[in-house]
Length: 93
Image 1 (cartoon, rainbow, N blue to C red):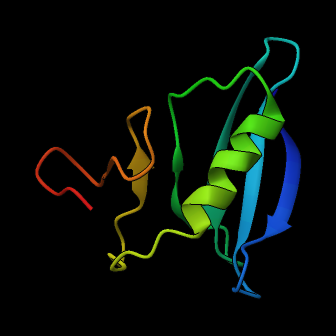
Image 2: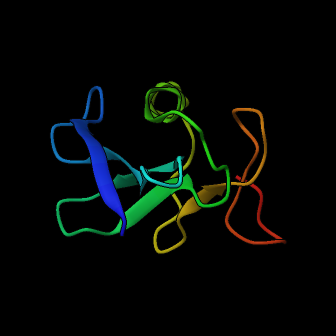
């Protein structure tokens, strides 16, 4: 069962929130930035963080990276280093 561990406001944005979620019994966590309507703007899907605080740290670092918004296409972190985002195989953010 997925559990939300942390839900904090995105720094400098009073509407969107960072959520760190995962399976505490299995020891994996991911993060996502969501709108008030629940739409995921960006986040991780396959990092498998072993510690929710590390996932939160990376989400906060991500929040400081400026990038062009891509409406309707969430940026998903598919690498081990900040800035390696993609919306699909053709569009790198």
